[in-house]
Image 1 (tube, helix red, strand yellow):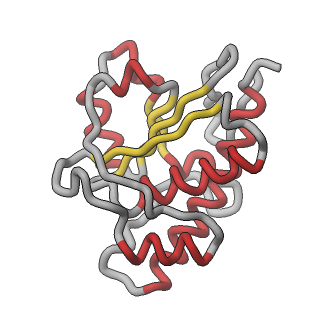
Image 2 (cartoon, helix red, strand yellow):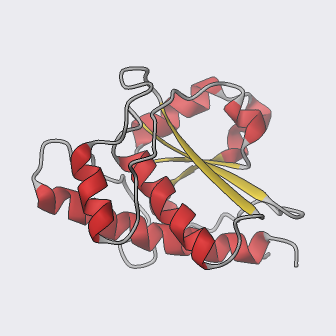
Length: 175
């Protein structure tokens, strides 16, 4: 089946378009960084009309705020801008709006599984499932307590996983 990734599952077949939502706890570090990276890759691939990207948080602590300044700075160093981002909270309607809802860690995945209807559970995935070089198990670590090197480590993992995700999406999109 097209769209396979190392974990053995596949991206659900998509007729013409795909929509992806990245989710972390507060929607100010990991999920906006993942969304910013994949959005940039989608633009570079000329797929903006076929792949839409957004991010959300499981909690409401940061709703309306921009991305963490350290995440913004690290992303700028790699050529993409997170400054337009505004945090929002995950809503049950997101399970209708998006084809894939990608968690940064197991706690986010469990929260999403409780919010989703059983018929929507197949949409929930872990970001690390798409990583090719950094392994497919575990979480994207929260760089909050670390220094700049923590944000760089997260960028390395997210860039690897974003490349794997985009490869899978290209395979799953109808020609």
